Amino acid sequence: MSLLEITGLSKSFGGVQAVQELEYTVESGKIHSIIGPNGAGKTTLFNMVTGIFKPSSGEVHFNGQDVTGLPVHELAALGISRSFQNLQVFFNMTVLENVMVGRHLHCRREFLQSLLHTPAITRSDEGARHRAAELLEWVGLKAYVGDHADSLPYGALKRMEIARALACEPKLLLLDEPAAGLNNKETQEINELIQQISERGITVVLVEHDMRLVMGVSDHILVMDHGKKLAEGTAAEVRENPDVVAAYLGRGD
Ligand SMILES: Nc1ncnc2c1ncn2[C@@H]1O[C@H](COP(=O)(O)OP(=O)(O)O)[C@@H](O)[C@H]1O
Ligand SMILES: [Mg+2]
Image (cartoon, rainbow, N blue to C red; front, side, top):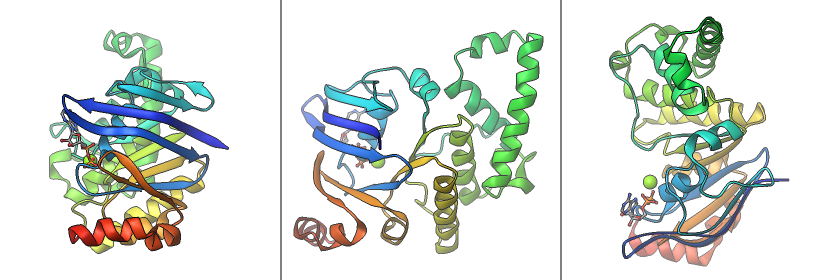
């Protein structure tokens, strides 16, 4: 079953066609990756699917519903969550608070009410605190729960951001370069975490440059170039696609 269906999706910034007439389907329960050189339009695609940018044209359907152009909080409430290419960390808060605040900011409509601290909200805060601690344990950060975020190594911060995205209890999780800047061991840990997330029934779409991670973990790969689909298929299909080989060899990356 397809969870996300993108048809004719385009986004331009002034004269730059960041994404052009993209057709893309994400199957429920699978691990998908999107690869392509810098500037290919990968992050722009994520920004349209998560409501940060409105598409210039085209449609996004999620779970059978037309969600084109909906705002971030409505898409989050429907079950679309993401991590960011650049860390979005509140460095003056604890690790636990970072995950909790993500839940408030991104997944709940009643955030303003929570600022008033009604008893009902305080109770739900306890629930959120408990859930945040569980998620941090899951991503391997149990030891850091009460620490200030600014004391964490970079690799741990990347995992904290995944916990925060999971705090929205998503059906679809979009990860924008989760292994960027990580060493081999940390990348392997991200690989295992992605597989665990998938095993729990969350559909994952990964934008990533680390080819070993992409090739190892993905059921399906979309290759983008200059805002367009260059190729798609399994790891083996994509690796042997002459257009992909030419594009990558042509650039030397
Ligand atoms: N907010 C923006 N304003 C103007 N141009 C943008 C913006 N976001 C992305 N672009 C442009 O869109 C193109 C695709 O960028 P991006 O989606 O970030 O690519 P990728 O994530 O594949 O590296 C690039 O040419 C980039 O400069
Ligand atoms: Mg990007």
